Image 1 (cartoon, helix red, strand yellow):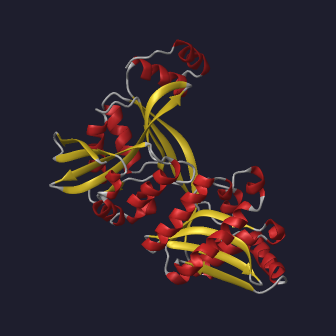
Image 2 (tube, helix red, strand yellow):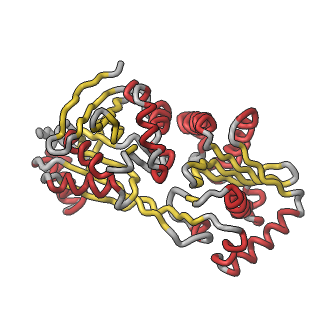
Length: 381
């Protein structure tokens, strides 16, 4: 059951903040939540209410979700979801409130009013600082964005302890015509692409398939995830198909994205056989590559890179503006671009004795303080 546990005015900002607990807090705010998210397309699909709902259902069912809704004149200007759990920092148990996210989330974004994103974040903070968390953690937010800059600044001004850990540096590139793209690529890389395409074509006719939903969705997803799980990821146990909760997340995400009209499952086929796959989303003029996969039996032909080339050409025809590789920078991504989008983990700790010692142990003094903290225990705020 949804619990509206606080509705208060933020002094000086003419902002009202409501805190709700439970999954009903998501389902009860879909229209205004997604209205904010869609008006700020640069936040990507990660700011949609459905993204939070799918993640919670897949990775944290039964856990406590708190949603902070900031409004002005009755109109929502921020929707900020946080997961409450017991966590550890420097080996010490803490009351942790964090973004509902993990490595499959790729990026964390709040739904904010595009006209006043920083005010909206500050309004959320004014209420959030009064809550009983010990550590606040937002993972993989865009470095220097409204949430990172404003939340960190406001917390620091209020005497809280703020730290940032650099995380993902995600390569991205503007989508341009094939001729224009080739002018930006290394000559040796271009030659390799041509040579490997010819080599792959000897195995059969090359075909690019794009599935956006419908009857082909299940088949395309199974084929694609089979490729992702058929290589080294499957052998190491890190593939999507190796973990039921992860497989459920991507299945739910595919159906949700199809309903939203942003699903883009790309497959490169050779003689009708899938050899490379993208689980992608095309949203707000950008293409987001969540998960790639390829048949290692064709690795000498670089089918994954050939698929990137074909997808870029298709996106150019579709008028898409940007290709975002997401995730960490990797050599195969950097073959295409030097542009990087930086992310951070934003930590905020209370300035209590425990908080100061934790901050010193985790971010300043290191092992000596950490060892002492682990031995003491029994903390009070």
